[in-house]
Image (cartoon, rainbow over all chains, first blue to last red; front, side, top):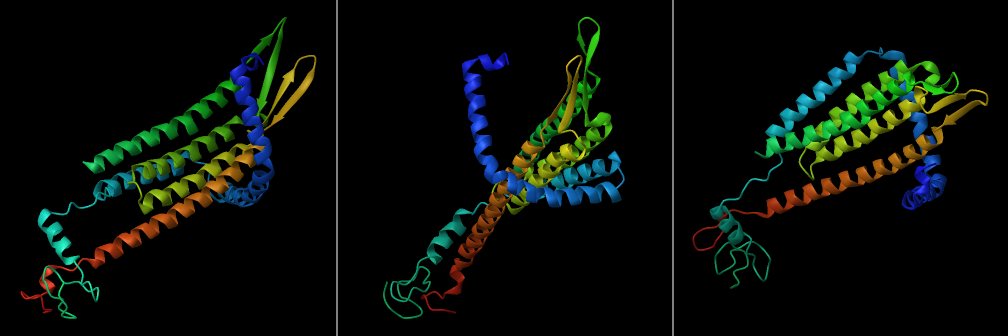
Length: 116
Length: 177
């Protein structure tokens, strides 16, 4: 209540309230659907998996260790193309003006014989 | 070098999740459960969370908080625009849903305050939880869309790589070998 006496905070609170009010119409029914499967999964976990911290600690360790291994070995960096290969790629990308087939660095098209 | 950078990023993500989903909520519940507000002359304001079964709330917070932190580590440490980043991002949103519902599941969304001389006030936040679950459903759809986008991007990249024909395919005079 004391915080709401600050104008800016009251404005933010009103703004968030409006967002909640209008999104409630759309989001709450979707949330109800989500609730169905989440509740059944949690009930399953609660019934069949013992309430022990060890299980979740093991899951955590597996995720972290596999994350370290996978992301260390495959960091997702693209291989740098060497200058020569780049040059070769540029040449091979040259295509015939008439038939559109690759002609390398030659003046004549090996497929249709036309001069480029 | 890039691998170490990725892992460092993963550890930052994991630390954020461990703090925000596990440590702060668990400590808050623990503190609120023990808290005693004295009302003069000699009365105590009693706040009851999860019908006094705070251990269940903390168990689910820690269990799902740990799972989420592990998933966050994997997701944050994966390279940008990679399939694994998006897939683990989706799994993380699913874990978020379970985490959020665990509050309701363990009874933490409703708490009562016994005000001496006035009676009992009960707060129920289940409606807000449903609202958030709806928002998470939309996030899941957006993430699946992102996965499709990444997949198409990868296929396009592969196609472009296939266009490359080495020079050795042609003879010296330009004729095909």
